[in-house]
Length: 546
Image 1 (tube, rainbow, N blue to C red):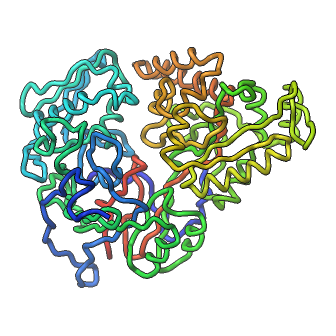
Image 2: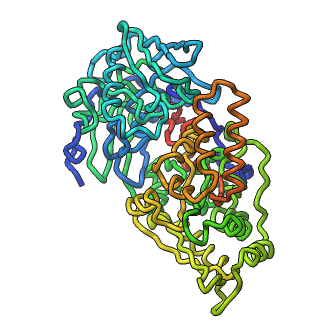
Image 3: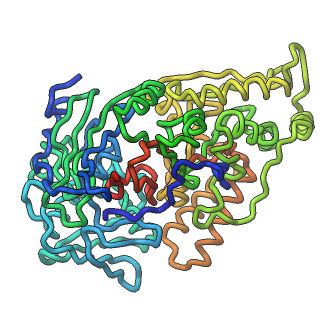
């Protein structure tokens, strides 16, 4: 069992769904070859004595892409199938992975891991402390790519004193250390034989890991085939073969499920609320929903002349009907978000008051800030019209729908909102560069929240850094975040989190909209469909047919 199921399935029932809160086969653009361990041959029988199904057909909206675990282009669910990390993140905390156990020095700066014996990569290479060090050396060589993880900034050295011991030394104690080591990217282990001259920054020769599955075939933009790893060190998965079909269109995916061409649709962006409602009472299909995983939000650029005024930003908070968005766009499946992080996120249940939806209050605040209705029913101040733009990802139908709704609602208050959709890469580039007035984004979600989301605010990783440049207390917020990450005093850490989250809430930099949840729709004979502590993992090892 690779990772413990975190959220319970809600199979076939969504009564409680209003939550609280074309390439060549065998190659990927010439980058790396498939692995080759082959399929396990053990027979299984179902409870009726017949032979149980051992192949699952999954679907994704795009290709698996580059599965180099030390870079960020590949599909994470596929990387989770192939690779392991030193530790696993579970509902109950941290559990052994490739490391059987570990100790932390009294000063919190030295982590010593005892590496599991007898583990091999699917190419036969031994996965010992030397192989672990080779992976860390490759990651460190490309350090600038990974500085969004504070651990990379604190790293002093890594060493393998013997075949079974791996040591990491930091310059400061760092409380999220094990969490960052437990996420797939960039700390999953690939066979040193698959590296290019001991490096992974320029690609790998093959996708070779120690995980429960191996990649045996794929055709770019069409399909990929994963088969059970015969040499896997953990519990062997019941499903022996997983075929992933690429179907970009949502309705085409649903039709494929209804025709029996696929068994499972999984992911928060793969399934819309209409599909959940359609199948929630079906006998042929099951539906599962997770607890909140991340927050859908709009980021306000405080360097913008209009949005530099906190009163204006707070007025926009009161002008945003989160309940209407929850009900109208998501049929209540995504709960209205009152704060940047759900109260279920560690350190975030600090009693922050919600910005109540109140258009009269919003109008009064805008009047108080000197923005009065002028010609054309658009507010003006000192001859300047209150005109803002909202940037969204044009690949997201949901963002476009919400943007059009807000354009109409804000317009009633005299705020002219121009909405602009751009393809994903352009949208992300402009967000990172701060080229926006308002922009859609999501927080990083489990298991990265709140520590990684906040840590990234201190540098231009996404749009947060640019958006916060107009805050008078930006330096103070950043200093507190830095102290959070190296604090060893739990009480002090909570005080610092409360300070940062309260400042960001009162500064009204973010308009939280809804709390996203993960979703799955699947054929009724597929069991064990649930969710883990890592929102990007599809827990295939837990699934079976009956």
